Image 1 (cartoon, helix red, strand yellow):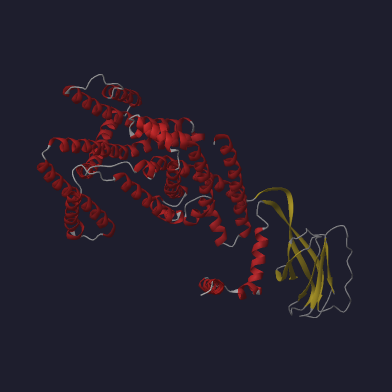
Image 2: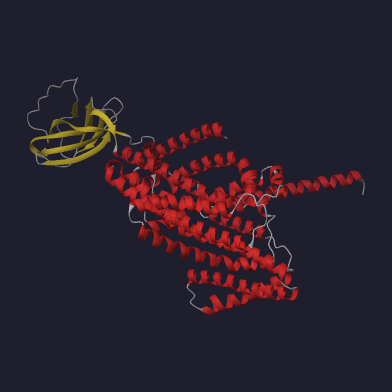
Length: 609
């Protein structure tokens, strides 16, 4: 085929493909209209347009200020039917509010024109027929115009009377100075609650997300490896360390609290405990080793480290105790600012709550580290056959324990109540997988445990970010009750997942030069993070944290719909009650706070970042 003909066929084919792409796009969007139920007839509906105009006008008139109301009543005599002698016209003062009824008498069931002058502009008015002093019949309701004038035609009931009747116009007139409405006062209280709700959630989320972000940074985790035997021993040691640490923390905390009921004893323990722990740790971990320590010295240092841990726990428990006691004392001494004392007491409770978790994790990490050293000693000291058999047995046990723990978690969630499915079966499968892993890897092979932790961390963060904070708020409302505390916990959990992802991506984008330089000096992984990573990530971390505070302020308005406190709870109530003027106040407050937060964060970023 000639080149010109080939080029022509290519043009035809491209035109056909473009046409097919256009047709496919039309079909896709047509199905999208059907799936989203686009209905333009509803847009043109007069009823919908009337409702929309009413809502928009209400939203454009936020209920911010109110006046004291004074009822203004105008009355005009009226006859129905007309008397034999025509009624005399009364004198009117054109400078004062007055009203006219035309005609001044009529047959029952007729229509008259009612006019009123010099009323308040745009005031709501109600027209009544007053046959006598004990009866008032409502005829119509309307509003005055911008000049305070009212004119309407009303149909009278068939209620004849030989005596004089009256038609009245009743309006409410603003008097005195304007004052903040109830909606404005409630909005102020809730917007303050919203700002601090977001602040606490951002702070808590940042404190937890910063250390977790290093686990989700690929450049930091990809070089971490472990031998099969070390991995198996770590899997066995971690749950044991977690249980032992939690048990030891509860025991030490109970003993310390029983002997430190006096503030003097608590204060002494809070000072002496950390001091002893610091001196013991300094002796057990000298900065420079002139010679390898002997066995007795190593055992003495190990004992010193255990003593330092015990002293630190006692000091932390005493610190929490003294904070609780100081908070109670402040609440009694300064009742006008009792929230300060409660805050100090809550800090003491938080210290006690965190102690068990922190000590459990620390003990688990310590035993996992020691298991790595034990694996290295076994690899270097045991014969090949004995090491192979030991590795096979320990790997089988580790796999059995790991899957048995997973089975116990599944049984807790789903309450299967069948040990064959939740304990024996998973343990057997885990043992087989453990032995298969041991046979797959040699005794000195390196398993990339760092990358496994990296993928696990990213998966957890992605899963938590996929769940909206509104759903989290529903769960926490069940746990801690309706209010802003549930909102703080929900936003904190969502912030942890979101900020850990942002922080880890920033760690992955740091310059590799300082990292390689610090690593080349033989620095530990912790030292590498402190001296090579943290100096590069502080500015973007601050920027991300400020931005997250801004996001949490906006998200807190949504979680209020689920009972998570803040201004969203008030906004949800007013929308459900169709009180759009009050809802407009909350929407205005949200817009002002979000804009202020944006300007504040921009200014802080310019100064800090």
